[in-house]
Length: 214
Image (cartoon, rainbow, N blue to C red):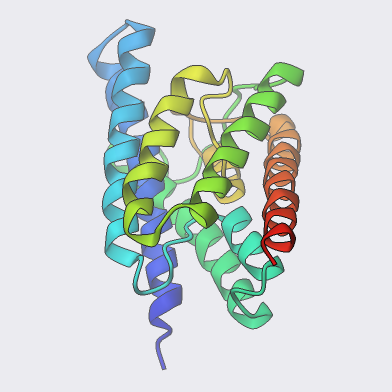
């Protein structure tokens, strides 16, 4: 039997990466203005993120992000077997989306990025971007999530030096492209560690808030 939730997570995450990487390639070809290129990339990402969240919210919960799934698991909102399926679906979906973007722009399906994103400032940016995303995912009303998370990500593209990856599956997948949105293998572990830290900080806040309200 086909797991509709897993398919939603796979294709939703694939679509997100197709948007992120595809718009990065397109922006590079359209303009040499780095600010305009970032605006294109951020706008496309936010619009597509809103659409996929709205589409899958009542199917899988529209996680599309391993840290959202992990926090949902730790809060008891999802069981371990389903969480594992989500994590695999998200990671494979992200890689599939990158491959599609690469092929569409006449690149090899899987390349390797050499763009290093190092330093404490980059990691701090990822902690901030991820903590904001996770907070909204678990604090906002369900009917507003599809609007608020894309708005946060759009803003975080500009107010974080890391340009708001905020997603381990996205981070891993973006190694496999030579688009400006790529990330070198040497930077992946630091980014994912910062993303996990940001999500765990929010987890602590959510648990404390829950205990205070009892």
